[in-house]
Image 1: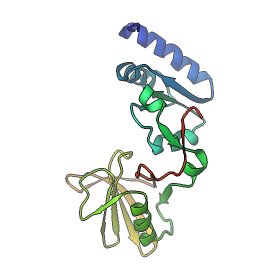
Image 2: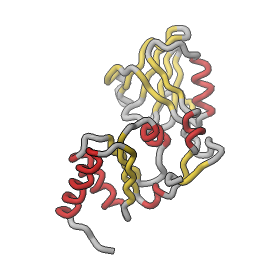
Image 3: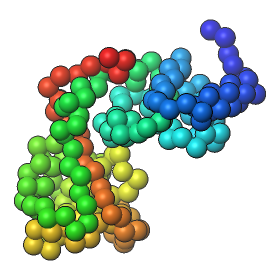
Amino acid sequence: MKHIDLKTLALFSLDIASFIEKEKGIFIFLCDNYASAKGLFDNLSFFSSKKIFFCEEIIPVSILYDLRHADSAALVTTPLSFFSKVPESDSLLKSFIHIKKGLNFSRDKLIETLIEYGYERTNIIENENEFAVRGEIIDINNADSPYPVRIDFFDETVEDLRYFDLNTQLSIKSIDTFTVFPVKSNYYPKTLNISE
């Protein structure tokens, strides 16, 4: 295998970024190892205004969801992630909860679905893929979210959604929407390779 130096990788990334800026579609880049994939991702993120995703292991459902809904984006992968199994498109589209501020939504149904999706119910969230319930408030710590999310219900209405700091429990910022995906590894009945 030939080693690509940083200057060559930067020039290659600039060429690729220029190409994907002009074209529409989903572009998948398979790199031979983590270091080259991370380098390509970093450079493409710098040179391109398109949405660029990086995955070194199993491709998260949230990335698949974003790719499915994007007009144009790029995914940089390693062989491990490229050949990992992913849910088929129909299963993926039926397996998420999109929560919006002001939406009428059953708090109890959300709790039931979180358990079904593989989230662990705890008194206070400390780890990824956990949720906690305190009265009309549900906290969710999802690995795909930059911060845990606090959902505040008033009866059957989502009154407030906000990111919060896991350590201090203080709000970071208010958000309008949040999407919850299954985290249970065997949730999907049929899986395919991403190239399928």
